[in-house]
Length: 461
Image (cartoon, rainbow, N blue to C red; front, side, top):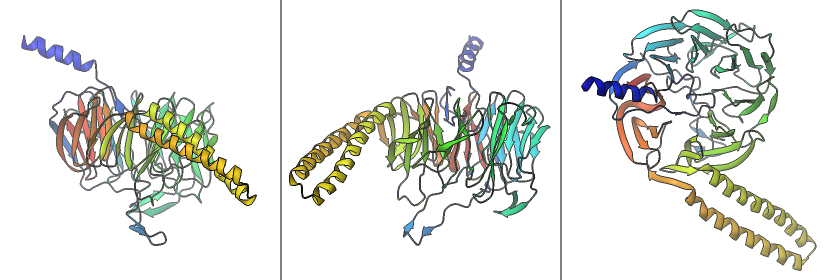
């Protein structure tokens, strides 16, 4: 009976198992998986780096003397922990400490192989079949065998060999800090550092690294900085820049289509219906603001002041705003905001018409416009009052650092802890202690992986 029960449990679990093959699970960086982890989880093993991650950027200035702002936000915090990818019984990560890509046995945490580069590896390898792809600050993208770490090919878009010192390391003027995005047999990546130097957006054959075939290209641009993981839909590539707006490129030929106005940062998520979620827009803002934009026309749809994290699954946006975890029907709130925008735009036109009426001393027209503005403001207030009805649930919780949705479980990483909430009800189901800030969360094949800013990777199962 015991054997039968164990086999039944194993069968049920494997039916819900799923890999985590690239940074934040998929090319939309959704951090959403169908993996159903069985609670309560126990720590199975822990990897500990000899020193914390050596981030590419030290962070923002302590304060802005000109603006009088303090508490400035980091716009390029894409490598504060060793984020992982996980396929079958292997887990992978890149290290900014020892300049290598690692493969560990997911069952016990023992090292299977390391592939060393000449500088920091800041984002985890992308896994496809028997190969792994990753970028390095030495300016190369590497393709290696997943079984051994043996090199298959490496590619460097710039022939310039110059190296510069950066945060205690020597790096290329064209470090690969975009990760490697794999789609339809093509490996996409960016090589970029400073806007006054050229930047490269590359699409190479994933199997060979070649650039000559249809849909393979190396686009050279100036005035941009490609920093943080690329995202992709079927037709477009999205490239974060950090202190400037995310850029949109046509994936077929690398043509730049424009930027997402009002957005910024490297925290980006692309929804299935091609809405881009990003933050922060400005390091000087007193509070964080998450923006949802239409990726196709690149216009802002709705903003969430005081929000610092958001992931999306279907109609629901899981966010942290103010001091609360919230689940919001994004379709409803975007529709309400669209109504508000129409009324606000009309009032802006009325205000300009009011100025003209004042100059013409047309008191009758001024009175008409004033009444119309008042009516529109009242309508806007009524619509704003309907926004709380878009919430599925809301509960007080401290600021999250990592966010992941695994089936019906919302995992929230914080300072020295990770907690789990039921996605539909908000009920707290599980919590565990870790050391440091839990930035990286990943779930695969019955295991929960947690990466912290101390350089530790935890496995719970």
